[in-house]
Image (cartoon, rainbow, N blue to C red; front, side):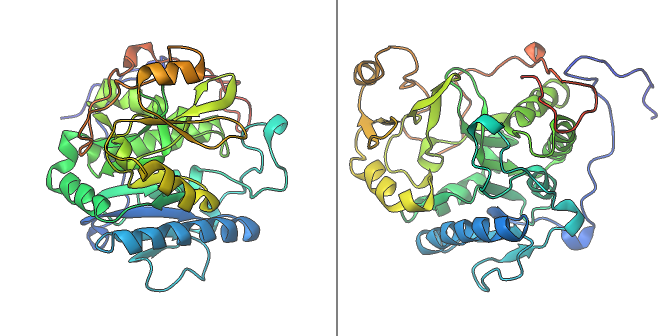
Length: 354
């Protein structure tokens, strides 16, 4: 049946429509099983930096979770043999130039590796796995056993009826923290990834990709029934800023039991893994202040006193067991979505806000 044609809505949510799914390969490229997907791409200088981080991260998973398959998207020809089950080589014209200062010239190191996330967005859809856990290069698997059990359970339970899940960096509600994204390949996630890619193109090749994922999620929740979950802290332990106006102090979400997967720079792997797991019998979260060691907080009162305020201490977030993806405490209503653009089709300009 041919759908009735109409003028697409100009609202941020767009218009629900029947369309062909994103074509990413034929029968010879069927996705199967579960695995981790890493990314290390860029110019000659950047790719070496990111590949070194990826290799270190992957070896921590190889040591503690040897049954988990690892894949990497990299334009570096010297990816270590035997470490990854799949080496996906991005097309040269899809490795974009990037920017050493993607968050603005006032807070950047112009000598740092050039970054852009558009290549990653495109190749998320070209994962070899049916269930994919896409991770940043600066991660570590701290403890043995947990990752294999979690990923196996997620595959067996079809991601507990969610389409995708990720870490959360919102005080209230759910806002993507893109260093850890877990997704099941289906028509809803295919539509999400395609929409995310197009929104990112409009916002800017090297622009922040978390706002565009948030927008794509709201659009697909409204029109396609997408279900978004939150990865438990045990498998997505990370710091996030408690204020939009300042980077510090930074908090984690509450943690019960051991922390298996941690977002950390390579030089912090050993120390942070030890700090996060030195006391694992009590529910806790961690605070990081400029120039200080990370500190465990064991109660809302202690957190409020340390931050000199009662708000922003998410002890009620998540669940005690933390073994499965779960429904976030509050999901933003898609109908409230607003997207601001600096100009209709300008790339590289300063976009609005979600």
